[in-house]
Image (tube, rainbow, N blue to C red; front, side):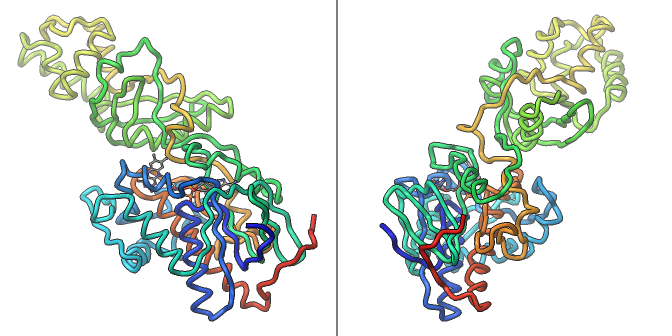
Length: 432
Ligand SMILES: Cc1cc2nc3c(=O)[nH]c(=O)nc-3n(C[C@H](O)[C@H](O)[C@H](O)COP(=O)(O)OP(=O)(O)OC[C@H]3O[C@@H](n4cnc5c(N)ncnc54)[C@H](O)[C@@H]3O)c2cc1C
């Protein structure tokens, strides 16, 4: 495809780009504008990330989506979310032929339980709306012209009156989202806030007992301190893995660890394995247990609070014999155990990196975007959407909701901007 002209060119055919393309093409038709939409993606097979999402089932969105489910400028996020809320996501997917079901956790999945259903519907929707989809078209430069943009890719170039950048972040680089989009945005004049892997499992020092617990999950209250200041506290399920910790509570909190570490700041994570109980409350319980059941073993007593396997490993880690009768547990051991149960310091040495991270924290500052339209405040006619913006959601379908919302808003706004006297034009003269 060389030197073709389009009304709108979208770079990146992930969740945000596909949504933006459908919204743009449908709005063009609605407004009876004679225009065209080009969707370029560097990957040979588009939608890889949608296919692997939600364990292959694609957690499309969540029952209730609020700004608190996201990190970033929440004022802006609130306004963006309001433009295309969950109800619209659900009805939009219905219009594409995808029925969603609610699960008890609040997550919504396709009734088929197959991510392929979602991807296929988006691709069919885009084709049906008249979008020209070009896989294997990696964009390597975008320059401004006097009426729009020249988009250069590995097979040539295309002119467009409006460009939508939807290149994602850096998570799962083999899917095509390798962070090059940030470079494109930066070259066009945007700042890029420091990026780091988010929703990523963490690796613990080898001296810890995680490998013996691999596969076990239980609740923990996880507190994160950056420079000794508490920045996050949340309760949820922690999953022990072969190399460290994962599970929703760890994934949600991981962004604080990765960002602080990247910035060279001291960051610590502490766990209370008996959420809601203080060390003093547990001490009273422990003393009462020792009085009522003096011959009961330490590990059996602990198993009323935490899973057996974890109780055994924790005792051994602290050099407390698990089979000691409660009446015989030395006070020092008891206090060490109580401290470990309520303020366990996780010896985190790294995160699992971009290949495992589900999203990117950081990116193009939301303040540089007009939240009513997703148009750049710095580069007229350029729209930015999806994960490349500095907004990351917690586990539960929130990141896709951000992609659908920003995609729709950008696609619709890009077309509506044409109605304001700016005809769908294209030109060869470059603006540097
Ligand atoms: C394993 C995994 C599971 C996940 N599960 C869920 C889930 O169940 N629910 C949820 O809400 N979120 C989930 N997420 C997060 C969610 O997938 C992302 O937030 C979302 O896909 C971001 O959409 P996007 O369109 O902004 O970016 P992406 O999906 O990353 O798409 C960007 C596209 O741009 C293309 N591209 C990049 N650079 C160029 C270039 N230079 N030229 C041309 N094309 C380019 C890429 O090939 C890619 O197709 C998951 C993520 C992962 C990795």
